[in-house]
Length: 297
Image 1 (cartoon, rainbow, N blue to C red):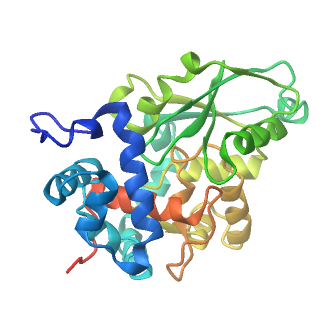
Image 2 (image 1 turned 90 degrees about the horizontal axis):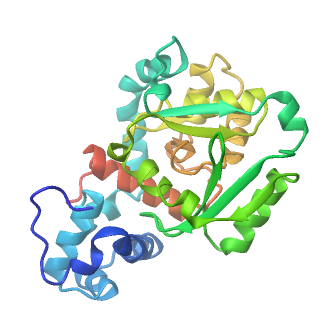
Image 3 (image 1 turned 30 degrees about the vertical axis):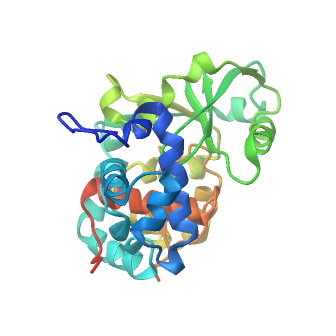
């Protein structure tokens, strides 16, 4: 997304607006998949169909990083460095996110959990409307309920059919209706908080412990990461790191409930429902937006 006053080169017009989401996402995925070969700028430019100069400008405008810096953020060492850097700010942020009437997550996201009765009923009588829309990380399935966003699933190897099958399994007695118009405003609301004039309402379906973990995730600032054990300790459950990891795996609101910000104490990424390549791309993207840069020299 171009900032105010940014001059866009003649070769970059196709990378602006919604149409540019998928093209730049393809470039990001290409860098992630080919990271071990440390591809050169000229190779990325070829993927984008731009000159090297325009490709670098466009990539920086979208991610906040040069391609070289982005590649540096995909390494294990970068993850370890981010984990160390996050320790000093994470405790206070999570304390704010988990306590008090002005919880941090309520400023940005209003998370509402289904009641135990609704959970047992499998979503009976609930009407869910869905659409597929571009995002900075490729196309994603957005599902809207009368009580807010109920699903954000990235279309990986399973594609749309796989994402819809998961949605039907999670909401077996609900009615799923294809209605892109009902979800078309959600991508901007999710990926550009400036587009929101109120906290984004989100409806989740999970156990009481899973909902606690998802609320805690909302307290991890962009650019920071937490370990599974550190998040469990912040929740007052110091022995529950595996249960925290399992709850992260059950999260169905990708990006917005940021389970991608939780990694292992070793700096290894751990798991991610939509694939580790996507998790790497998200962490690198957030490092650029928040100014957390690894040494790219």
